[in-house]
Structure formats: C-alpha cells, structure tokens
Length: 588
Image 1 (tube, rainbow, N blue to C red):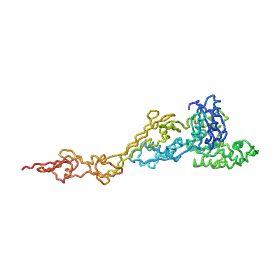
Image 2: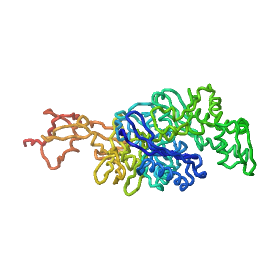
Image 3: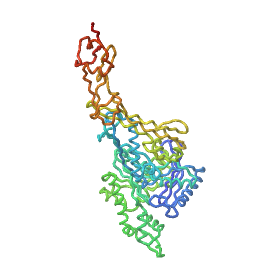
Image 4: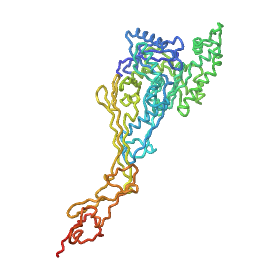
C-alpha cells in the first residue's frame, strides 16, 4: 500500500461499533478520526449479527459522523469477522497409480482438488457442490505428501502404487460474510477487505519478532473471546470461546435484578469505584462495595477464565509461555489472574495490552485501552494488504463470491462454482497391465482432454489470476481412454522365424497362449492377462502349411533342400534357413 493511502475500518462488535480512518505514513500509521457507538439494543449475540437494521443504523451514524469530520464521502470499509466463524479442517485424499508411470503435475493438481473437496464435505456433511453454497474457502496449505504412505517433499517424477496428500483448509460460513455485506450495503458502503478479528489483533500485538515465542493472544470482547497462538515464527492456530464480558454482565443482572444496560454500567464502574450505586427493576436503590459485587460474580469470572484456558490448552497442547489479553472484557478485575491460575502460570505471565502499547500507530490518543486494539488491527491489516480478498465473478452464468488470502485463480473459482475435480482435470485413462513371458508390461492410458477455459472471451488456464467482475466460460475436461493393445504389438523380431522358401521371404509368428488358450496376433489384450510367446519349432513338413504346394498330378521326384543340402520331411528348420522344394523330372 502506498504512503498516504487511507482506509475506513469498522469493528462491528457485540456491544459497540468502532469506526476509524487511518492513513499509512512513511513510518507507521496515523489515526485521522474515530467514532465509537454502542448498539441501542442487543442487536448482536456472540459476535453474530441478529438485527441487521439495528446494526446498520449504528454503522450509518458512524459513517456520517466520520464523513463530516473528514469532509469527504466514505465509500468502502474494511471489516472483520469474529473468530467464532473460522473453521479449520484437516483433510486427506489419495489415488492409486501405476508403479511404472511417473507422477505428473496434473496428478498433483487433481489430488489437491480432491482433498479440498473432502475438506468442504467434512464441514457440512454435504457434497462439495452443495457445501460451496454454505461456506467461503479462505485458503488451504499442504501439510504432507505421501508416496505409498512414505512422506516425501515432492511427488512429481516419482513412481509408486499410490499417492496421497494431507491439507489444512480454512473456511468462513457464507452467512457470516453475507450479514456483514448486507449491513455495509444498507449504509451505501462497498467491502474494501475482510479479515478475521484474531488475525487483526494478532498482527499488531504479536509482532513478527515475537512469534518465535509460544504466546497466546486472547481478544475478550462482549460476546466472544477470540484466541490466536504463535509458535516457531508464525501464528499457527485460532480458536474461539462463545463467552466474554456479557457473561459477567448477565451474572450481575441475575444477582441484583437489573436490566442489561444497568448491569453493563455497574460492571464498568467496578474498574474505577470503591462503591457502586444502582437501582433494580423494582425501583429499589442500592449502594454496594465493589469487592462484594466482585465476590458475587466470582463464579462467572472463574468459568470464563476456565473456558479460555481450556481452549488455549486444546489448541497449543500445553500451557504457553505467556498470555496477552486485549479487548474491553480483559479489564474485568481478577480475570487475568484467574487465567494465569488455570494455566498454572505466574501472574506476571498474563498481561493486558492496550492501544497505547502499539507504538507505530499515532493520532487520536483518546481512542485508547485494550478495546481499541482490534479496530486498529483491522485498519493496519487492510493497509498492508494482508486481509482476505473478496471478488465477484461469473462461471457459466453462476455468480461466485470468493475469499482468499492470495490472488484467487480460475481453479478456485471453478471449485467455488461447484465443479468437481473430475470435471476440471478429467480422469486419465487406466493403464493396461499384463504379464508377457513372466515380465510385467504396462500400456499407458490416454491423458484426459483438458478443460476449455476462457476469461472475458480469451483462452486461459487454471492458474490464471481472476479479478472482480470477470466472466469465466468453462467446458469440462473429457476423460482419457484406457490403455489398449493387441498381442501383435509386442511380438518383436527375436520372437519370429524368418526363412526363404523358393526364393520368397516368409516371417513366421511365435505360438501365442493367453491364459492357456491359443490366439492370433490380432487378439486384444485384456487387463491382468498372462501371455506366453514361444518361438515355433518347425520341421520341413510344416512348410507345406505355409506355402501352396500341390503334388497331385506332378511327375518326377520331389526335391527338398535346406541351405542347399538334401533334407527330409522331419528335418528341423531354423531361423534364416533357405528352403527349396520342387519336382525334378526323372528321365524315362
């Protein structure tokens, strides 16, 4: 992204919506304007939009307020989906191959497509075509390649009886994305980019230099607690707990008979006051010590910390070296200490990070605290181009929306449109295998006829990068024909006997036996056949089955010679022999 580029970022949370305009500077970023607004009612639960009109109303107010401050119209927005929506799926695919034929790039592409289709099916219980209507594929990565169950780095050029692949694919439910798009559309906004909330927060809190460390980031909002874990140089796992600050609020409401808004106010005052005053739904006024209220909600605080700790342990396999908490819910007194206890970590290994700790983002210092980390992260991700791309294309008149961290290709569009790997790549013809005199022989099947693909009327391939608005015409691949051969195709000169009879050349084929039955060279070879070729053992009398020789009515003596020497009917005939047979007149 160029220096001076600006982005309008929206963090649409369960309790609040935060909008900010951020500009990329030569060094770092500057927040030019921001606006924070609470939903008027409970329009979202656990990070999911339930009342589109109410959420759109809040977004519209923020948009109009920022437009007034900036003095220009805001037309596109960067947003984030809650971590609750992210599905990570491991999937495998395999196929049998001929041990005598090299594995090709086409074999590899087809195998990857099969694995992706299996991943989609596994998250929905449907076939791949139907599942694409429910989920957006964010992307996938290869975990391992296998040749006959042996792990290899590259299968191309190898030979074996089977190949397989293991992938990790990530998905977003289409409903999550569509609800965000609907809200933006109601407000006259187009989607600039979309990321995931834990990715956004992690990108500005767990910086690349920290990712060698095993750190858990927990974004504790109102409805969800999103988790990202770093190790060995990258953020490798994401998770979500469907509990957060609202659990504490609801416990306060239940204990003291308060409506939700009053309970939320009481919870926030626990941070700053020693005594809290409130009025219950019966109109009675109360004044309680903060420590007494904290004691009353201790079980909810413990439950939330327990759920977060268990999710971290499940994702990481062990307690991390440290836990960093962000989000407004992280400010709940005692919560960080409870998380440390649940993970058996020292108290100082669980800390809270605020926007003030993000040194490379300046401006609008009043937008502060841990709750500002995620909206800042959404903006930074959008400006750095590390968000998910989102484009609309048509495939044979099928409208397709595609998300992806990399530039999406024709292959991705075809898979999203519901075409199967077999339709995209075609199936190579099966090889014909048989034994010839005990040796295994293979006749390759024909390759599939490639699919015909055009983008906007121009011929292209599966790896071509697509852009928003492209129209793709797709004609499926045609499966290859199986391997075919006749016995005669495998008879060579060494199997034949070549002789001359009366000056004419003759070539005598061997005896041919298939599965115990004699056949001719024109016989089609069946798969798994056992063929025996035996050079014929000839004697001179066999020659009369080869040439037309009519002794009837002839007079004189029959002369038979092999290589100029007199021979009899039982004389053996060898390869290369010259035979002469004729009648010799006997003088009267």
